[in-house]
Structures are given as C-alpha cells and as structure tokens.
Length: 156
Figure 1 (cartoon, one colour):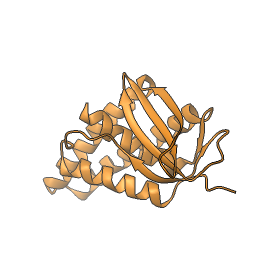
Figure 2 (cartoon, rainbow, N blue to C red; figure 1 turned 90 degrees about the vertical axis):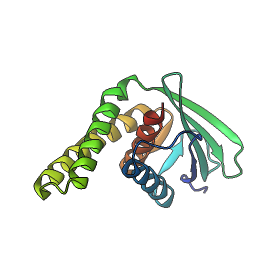
Figure 3 (tube, helix red, strand yellow; figure 1 turned 135 degrees about the vertical axis):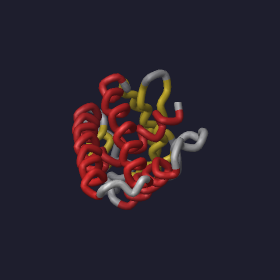
C-alpha cells in the first residue's frame, strides 16, 4: 500500500513576505505539513507525493506529482470562497505581530491568537470541503495548506 501523504511541498519563487513573522509562520507550516499529513488524491495510488502549490488566475493550483516529481494531476480551486478568510487572517496576523512587538498585555495577544485560530479552523473546514471531490486531507493538513495559501496570496 503506497503512502498517501506529502513528502515535499514546493512554492513558486517570489518576493519575500511582508514580515519576518509571516515568513516564520510559512516556514513552520511547510515543515509541519511535511512531517505529518494525510494527502490522498482520489483514484491515484502512487504516493507519497510532491505538491507544487501556487495561485494563478484567481485559483489555488494543486499540482500533484509523485515522489520523483512526475506530474499526476492538477487541481484548480476558485480562490473566491477563501478571499474573506485570507484577508481577515492576514489582518489578524498583522494585529498579533503588532501586539507582540509592542509588548502589549498578554490578554490582548491571547485574544488575537484565539481569533486567528478560529479563522484558521474555518478556512481549514472550507478547504477540506472544497477538496473532497479530488483529494482527501485531514483537518491539520488543511490548516497548514491554508497558511501556505495565505503566504502565496500575500505575495500577489
């Protein structure tokens, strides 16, 4: 039985993210994603997989490849249903970064972090739902993929 998981995630080269915090968040999500994930493209039993994730023409593009980087399937999801969540998530991340850098009250940082987690969870549920006809992913995998989508969106 092949491993139905990601062993590598590739993002297109681009300008650096706006902040060191956002870049650290992106790097951590990519590391955690590769360490533990469930990624099971329906009808493909040739795992483990490499994922080339990008945003093109208003779509999230999941270019799924085998371990040797040979193309298997490309899935493009409309970004529209995620736009509000991406925008809100980026605003909350900025507020969190500002609160931490200003050494604000711990209660403020915690409240912002709870809001960030709530948005992250909502986006992960939406991503699981939108991908279910193409790829089975677990909740934590979807959370980490959403973080990477936000990083890509920030670059545009």
